[in-house]
Length: 229
Image (cartoon, rainbow, N blue to C red; front, side):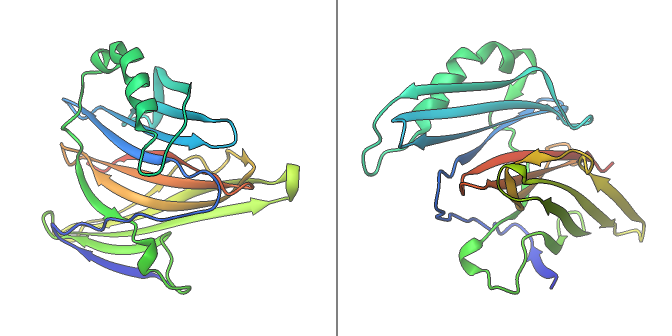
């Protein structure tokens, strides 16, 4: 069933609990010209007593990581109740400051969220991967379908996905775009879900944040980008 969401300036904000290790997604901003986007995730591996963070810088137009734009850090730590693993992110940011400056990333330039998942309000018939919603500020209708394919079991399990996007503009023009790398398989990933969709500050690109779950119920994040103007 297609899920219809009407969004204006109101935001859909969600927090969810999963088994396994669920990373926290962090929007770190776009470059001043909107050409690059930086994001991170951080979490706590309780069995190892370590906090971790991953940081990524993406070339929005090409939908690929920039050279030297992938970073990972792990740090010994004990997380007490009420504490966060964000210290891992702060530590990683200190060691990657030159990359932020190189691509002119501006922390406050976070773009405009068009959709953020509300897992606690979903029913079994709802799907975060089949969305229809209108951006009233631009008077544009979005239809989004994430198509995924999972095959194999155990150590042989692998999956792939892509996104079909349809844009219907105020002037009647309709644009259809296929996003992602449908030929690329990821081992051990059992499911993909659209977590949020962000419009770039220049309003010429979309950022799709995708949560991916593995066979151990760990959740991590990845993104797909596309130019729409």
